[in-house]
Length: 340
Image 1 (spheres, rainbow, N blue to C red):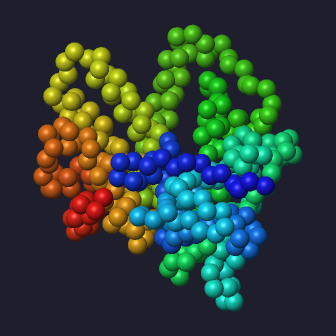
Image 2: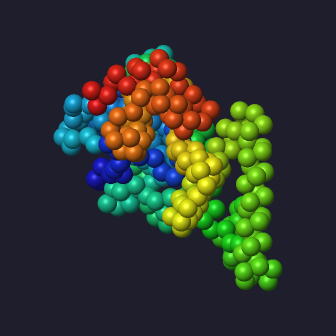
Image 3: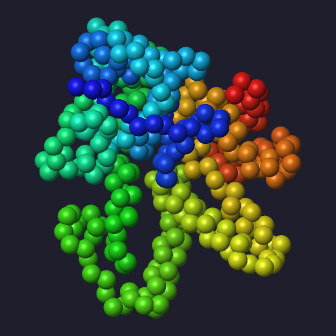
């Protein structure tokens, strides 16, 4: 049987993973090996990379300046991702008698080895499709707390199932709630009433959406705990605001200075998953430097290639929202630019 073929991970110009819409990073762990198959180490191995748990995927970055390959297969490792929707089950082994903690992931795959899509995995889990199961092992050779950090964040991501919430949102019809979509299962689509039809229905739906948006903002900013629970919804809302403002800017012939200032502020809301010390760990300054480099691409173009560090500090923190970065961390991240 051929090895499991992981999805290609697209990177930015600073070698940071490009995240999906509404995807949020939960943790980064260094010095992690990927071992394909379960035949006791004779299968393909990708060594000494960095792995991340996000709300939607597992991301693996190969080590800088090396192939990261090993074992009998001889295939060179590559930056890859594994959708959490393709996981059937997992098992962790972290005992006193085992030198290296490991996680064994059971992954749905096709005959060709490609990872199953969310729809294929769901059908296979319910017995409606025949797919193969493959084993992918993660060996943690870094810091002593790596295994516990990975386990905690993987359980959190699998429990929340953010990828399913997005799919349900796409399937919703006009005036239909999230609960009604969840409850209908595979049944017929709910009919749209006469009150939702025509221009009047569209305007009524727009008013309802605006009220829901206002309510989401009020609830989210009551305390930090509520804000974290509302993160996915707030990210989607900020994206809609930016799209609407960009469209208005293109159509308007002239705008008041005050309106332009508001638009400029809202359009700067761009970092949906800011790098933090809790998620990046020992990779914090490296990841922060990469995110900062990606963020500064547009401001540097507008300012003809140069921008004051104090201005960078202001606009970068404004875009990060509540996850503010200190001046010392910003300077240390900027000092890493020559190595990138």
